[in-house]
Image: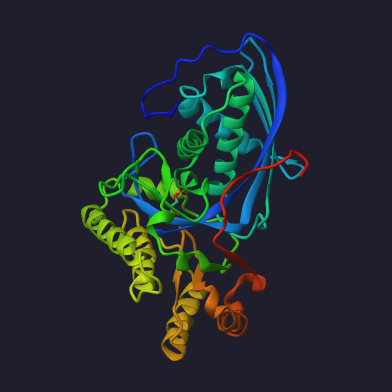
Length: 366
Ligand code: PMV
């Protein structure tokens, strides 16, 4: 069964108490075409396209205890440390958005252990990896409680749906490679409610993409993504942005049918700069770009011009720069990073990541 927006599930709950544990590893993702602004129940104002990372992932294990009496509770540990403020946040999401789809949660105690492969203070949004891992664990728990299996494609689609309800862009972290989130009439199956893999529409050349995440600042940002999304509601440039992003997405998907196209990085950079332009021009406006971000961008422009190597940058809602390039240019680009870019990174920190195969179920102690 596939979950559908606004259709609460009617489930006959198990009549016996049960305990168990499940674990998933799930990666972060980086958007090439940016989602910015949402409506309704975590639905995107525009479609977005991303690829899943390989090394930056969260491993989450959940010990659960289901009882036939209402007994909902949640404990959350990051490494060995209990994170009570996040427990409250997650319980809020469960109550507000998840119970209607996973009604057994009202009867289940959850003890969640979560770890990120990337440093906690690296300034990398961990919500996509953490929330997708959480969603996958919940679906695995449901399978165990009901002694039934979703079909494989239903399992992943539902996990993407639940991940979206926890944190929008997390829905694009379930599958490997390239993912589209948002309804697009040309792409059968695409939906605002979950992401779909689009690797079959893209030349395999793009699987060799790398993402060097250059940590300009590891500080937690002052304005959260949720606040940023809500500022899009009355944004004076919202209508223009939606025309722009749809054009960019159409062009990008068309371009990516062929390898090594000249417009690829132009579109990616246009998306990143537009995202930050929208932040600066919202009311109140704000600025997440730091001087080090600009220094790196300037260096990238110069290097590209001089060396004639296909590479470019994108940014999330933060100051860090994601330098994207292809395997064939690995040697030159790594030298460039070491010699010219690390000087602008906080404590010389960067993450050497690339496109990855997506989430994976693991043993609890693996
Ligand atoms: O999923 P959220 O609410 O953290 O929003 C993330 C939005 C961006 O990272 C800025 C863009 C995107 O599409 O990932």
